[in-house]
View: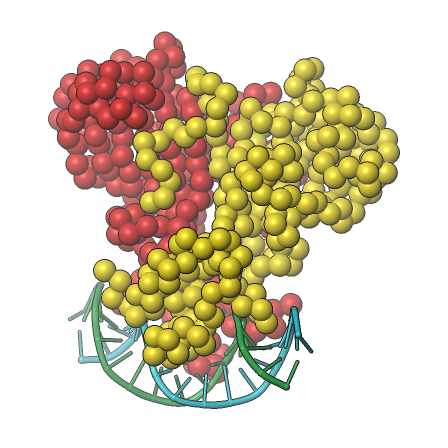
Length: 252
Length: 252
DNA sequence: CAGTGGTCTAGACCACGGG
DNA sequence: CCGTGGTCTAGACCACTGG
C-alpha cells in the first residue's frame, strides 16, 4: 500500500495516537527520526502527513500534539450562533472583539439587508476560539438601529445572537448561506495563525428574524479547516434532528 | 511578508501564471531551482505551495500545469445532477459507470427512502470527470422499481437525472444534503487518483420527486477539493439566481 | 531514452517558546 | 538556555511519462 517510508511511519503513528485525548504531546520530528532510524526529512514528512489528516497539530517551539476537529453544523434549523453551535458540539467557545465601529452602510450590505445605503451600521470584527485555538475570524454587519449600544453590550455578553435576542428583540435565523473552501490569503492566515495557503472555509450568511422574516444581520467568516469540520445541512422532508443522510459514517 | 525564500518564489510565480489558461505547462522543480538559484528542495517547496493554493497541478513524469477549480453549486433550487451542474459552471463533464448491481435494499437506505428493507435496489457506483480529471466518485441507490432497466439505460445516457426524468417519470430535486471536508482515505484516494490524506468533500444527498415529494434516490459522493470548489447554498428569502450573499468576492 | 515529480540522506542555521 | 518546528543545501536513487 503505502510504499513510501514516511507513509508507513505515519500509519504506525496514526494507529498509536488514535485513542489519545486531544492535546496529548506526541513524538516530534527528532524523536521520530531516532525511533524509526530515518533522516529528519523523512520523519518530518511523516508528521506532516498526520497534520494533513487533521490528526496532530504542531507549534514551533512547543511540539506536536494530538488534535481533534470540532463539528460546526450549519443548518437552517439552528441559530447562527458560533458559541451555541460549538457548545452543542462539545467544545469551549470564546470570542474576542477585534473592532466594532459605526460606519455608513455600504451599498452591497444595504442591498442584502433591505436597508438604506449610508444609514448607520455596526461593522463588527471578531475572532473566535475553540479550546483556546483561533478558529474563526470575520465580520458582522448589524444595523445600528437594531442595537444602538452594541460595543457596550458586547462587553457584557459575548454572544451576538444573545444580544440580538435580548436587546434587539429579534430571533436570528439563517436565511441564506454560502460556504466554500479556499486557500488562506495573507490577512486570513495572520488572523487565524496558520500558514499561507492553509485550507479555510469561507461562510457567508444572511440572517433574518425568525418571526417577522425581516433581514437582521450579515456575516462573513473565515474558519480554519484543521480545527473545525464544517458540516452543511439543508433539508425539508425530515425532522428536527441533525442525523446524517448517508448510509455509513464519514470516516472514509 | 513572506520571509521564506520558497514563499517569495511562489508569489512571483503565482503572479506570472495568473492570466494563463488552465492546462498551460509551467516551470517544474528543476527549472525553478535553476532560475531562482536555489536548491531543488526549495524550488519544490515553492511549487508545492502553488499546488496547495490550487493554482497548479502536478503529474509525475509529465510536469506542472496551470489549474482551475470548477464551481459545483449545491442548492435546493437546482437539480442534483453532476453533468448539469458542471456544464453550467463551464466545464466538460463525463461519467463512467464502475458497477451497477441489483441488491436487496439495506436497512439504512430503506429508512431514508421510505422503502421496504430488502426490496430490490440498484447500487450504482460511478466516477465522474471534469475536463478529463477524475473529480468525483461515489454511490447512488435507486429503487429498482423506479427504473427496472437501469444498466441498459446508462449505456445510452450518462445522466442519471435525465434517465429518472425520462424513464422513471420523476423530477429529482435535493431534499436533504450533508456536506463536509475530509482527508482522503485509501479507497477514495485510489479512485480519485490523489494522494492519501488529500482534501476531499463528502456530499451525501437525499433526493425527492419535485412534484410528489416522495424520496427517489440516495447519493454519497467523494469529490476532489483541488479540482472542484464545492459551494453550498441554502436560502429562502431571495430569488432564483445563484448570486453570493457576501460583500466581496471570495478571493481572500 | 530524457525529463518529470516522489522520496530520501546528512548535514546546517534560524525563530520561536518555555524554564 | 534547550528543544521545538521552519527553512535550506547538495547531493542521491527511483517510478513514471512521453517520444
